[in-house]
Image 1 (cartoon, one colour):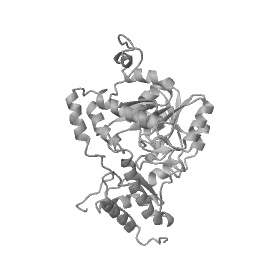
Image 2: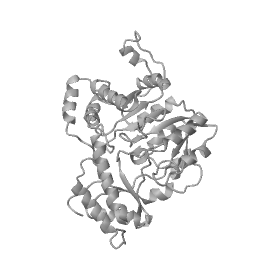
Image 3: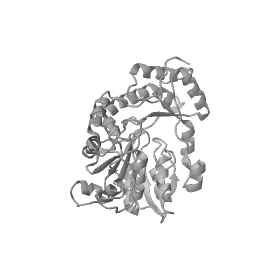
Image 4: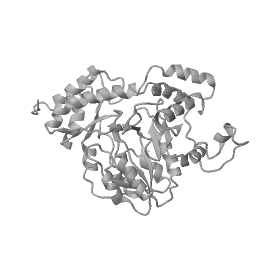
Length: 386
């Protein structure tokens, strides 16, 4: 293997995080809900929602609060694509809800919205679109279906902070939006972290109570009540103040961070396009009206049997590439708690074909060029179109 290793991903670091962390340490309010938590929430509310936002320990925590707000009971169902991380469905399964999986759109690997209505039953309570790789799902279609059937929409925008759909920030279109600030995401709070976006005003009051461990402590601290009481179920999902201090300088660096990543993403697409034209790979298509955040760059090998060979070829040359998820519906637990509706035309096939190339904020064009050249070298001998 080459001595210099180019990883698939590295956490985003702006260089300004330590100043904010040192400042947070002087406040002695380290458990959260302090200065930097408020700054992060204000940024999200002003830049994304216009509604209410809570910074949390993880996107999983955001999804768990969303499940509580959806009022899920055992036997209820949520519709979701099968190609996602387990947290997307675990948050609903713990409340006894059953995930109903549908196939993917071949161009984006988001849920195929034309399959949603066939999956709706009297037990359906929510649709959970996942903006895979930061590329927008067809939210117009999702919201129209939800409106017709009286369903809640919980956007899993874990990978999508900084992306938009027809001018609206991803995570702000559904009734609720869930974002991740885990270290592999475009913005990170230093390891784990997330946010819940409340886009329907009628959900805001209860969301705050759940966030406050089931109490009206938020009202108490604002002087709206004389003392606080336990009113509802709640969870402890408070982002620490140190994590919020890590995150805030990154949010201030938007939109530069996703813009730089999109530049690298576009270079990959342009340089590898001859391989797609030659029929050896497929790359994502960004729908009209969508602006992605370049969370990852993926392609799919037309010959899935060569994926392991490609990954080893690149690793032997110091470049780490990788597959990502396995279909949840065909996993042991997925088979136990959920079901797949319709034909699996894309999900299993695409999961076996996909490869992620290195993409992160510190990736230099010179390093990226090495990745590109090695990928082209793997297919040396393929007739490429000029």
